[in-house]
Amino acid sequence: MPGWVGPARRLVLKIKDRAQRASVRLRSAMRADDPNVSLERVQRRLELLLTAVYGRPIPIAPIETNLWNRERVRQLAKRDPRAREPAPGVDGATIYLPPELGARSGDADAIARYRLFALEQAERIVRGTAVLAPLNDPLERDLYMVREGAAIDARIAGAHPGIVEALSDERRAVLARRPPLERLNEAERDVERLVREALSAESSAEPSPSSEPSGSLAWARDTAK
Image (tube, rainbow, N blue to C red; front, side, top):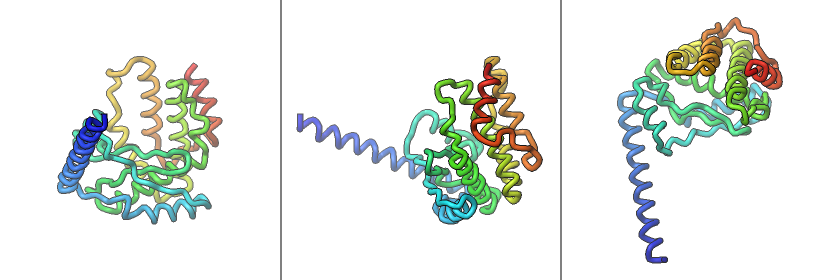
């Protein structure tokens, strides 16, 4: 057994090393054509912003992008640089952002997007969005996240007028990447229309649909019925 484990582990490490090198080469090739801004460059500034806004430190970390699967490869094949970016997220206490953002429109726009992403995820942490998410019911969960997303965007637009332009631009970009309605079943189309309605709303003029997650949950359950 020991004689087999040694070579097997070396093979696994060799495959992992090759995958990591391929990842580095691929990202280097992408950078050659697409200017970008790294999270490392703005991370400290973003964390200071969140501390000032929410009165407590909220750590930010880069999303791990060394993991390769079919979805990751499919994203990298897309022409739209934004479609290749991993989605921001939270784990309850830490915000995870893409390790870099495309800067074809200039560094200022990419930094504004980082600021927007940080504020959106911080709002989810402060509101406790994940606490009430109905994870056992996919339909209620999706509706809940649509409602929470709209509420969070409304909150940000009202509290941070300087970020409204970036928010509107991000919504337009996301809306352009939504799946065709004809590929969806009836229930999926109903939810998709609600998503598009939220994304199409004017960022600077919309009232918050839910003041807290419990309101979003009640709406999601009623709508699901």
